[in-house]
Length: 278
Image (cartoon, rainbow, N blue to C red; front, side, top):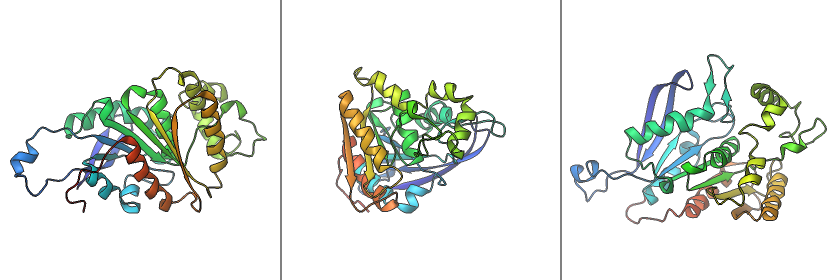
């Protein structure tokens, strides 16, 4: 594969910004003109990192480059700081991460790189914070993605937000959630925003508009596995068709995510292409 590091000034993030991109490499049996001037548009995975990470995480800590090579898949990895893939209008000069992905990064990549803009050729995946971003994009912008893989993250029921809730994702006094709620303009605004993925799924479950959804979680993930099971039961009650993957002996860790992303690529229907996988 070819790995591209691209630095540019972002309109939505108000700063210089660096992304990492994996692109299919030229097969040795093709001439340069045959390959680079073919006009071929590749399927693309928008791959999101977790808290404390950046655009290099997936390349440094998994074999995503090799997995993409095996499937002739382009992979785009943006950094998101610890933004929760949300808009932070009052952060510095404004840091609109939620809008950035769909309104700036995707059009730029479609225009400048050999990837397809067709919905059926676009997939999104992420782990932990990136998993929450993934499902947020999937349910708010379902027209953009054929399928989504949410690793070690699930929506939570905002109706259960309470200072007495032991789940940190539902305790409004927990520092991270408190900051997110304040950023949204208060609890009511937060509940009625694009962040309330649980409610959005409830409304869309029977409309057949959502991308195909894949959820994965390690069974030793003490932070998330109970929420994973609760959301799986909720989807079953809704009649929402989703695929679920879990493994005993794995927690919130890269060893699990390296396995889970392979399962996700299979779920997307990205078959092995043969040839040299190295």
